[in-house]
Image (cartoon, rainbow, N blue to C red; front, side):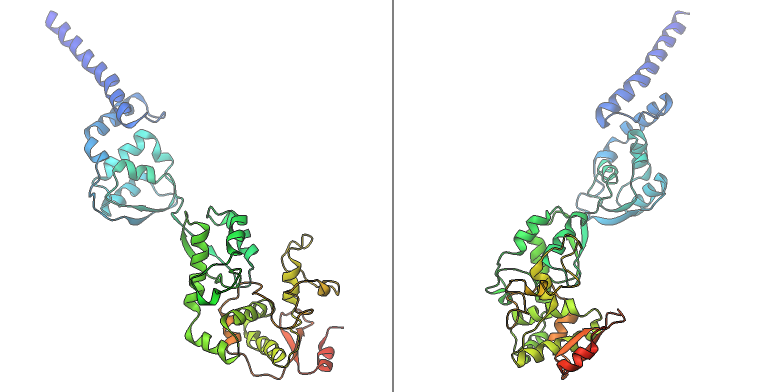
Length: 365
């Protein structure tokens, strides 16, 4: 009887040790268990983690490279763990699954794209999948945007660059490229494109990426085309920035470029509405940087950018033109036109004229 009692006491002691000691040790090593686990599950998963300790904390291959891994919307934890094991990221799917269930992280794995690899421990992989925020963002710049419009798109871009910081940096002179020699701004040279950038990019890194992209697109053909028109690259980009704002349909860009080049060759003022819009700045009522329509009073605004009041090109580009506008200036159409106006059908196309009288006939009633 005494032996039986002793055995029962030992058994109870072992049971208590397991029920209390194993979860306590697991909690000390891996943190608190999920509240949703019942007593049996708590002991079960605590014991599994302690048994698999080395597999949890040591990477499968310390020198293994990271790879892309996508967690699909609605995908089960079992499927995720199995695919990670098949991809060679972890040694055993069950080890990751047990850790996720024990910690409760199985309920907060986010669908999305991740970078994971065998140099990460199972614990690292589990924590990585709690944040689907990508390490890179895609930042789009549209043709015809001025610096302030690019800045306005930053708050929703995923880049931590304040708009005012971007405007300040973009309107400073910077060297490194012949086409920016003497320029007081990067306006015109922030090439419209989609940029895949690290989320941690600085304002200088962003501007350098865009200016470098412009340099890559400044081909020999473009440079030679600008020279044939008697324009330096800076002058050509300035003219292209006007063409960009005027040409709603890209097929008209070479014709519009020819009109302005024809005017320049005879010493006629450009009389370009976009230069006045640029000079006016932000229109708080219309909530745009490009006031439309322009009034007769607007055309009198005092600014070196106002080509109704000043001869020749404005002192700098008024926006950042795309490739079509740049090509239009490099290879304009051969036309006799000196005038154009928007068609009355609001199609975005223009009517062109050689004489002022013809131009007047084209105006809307």
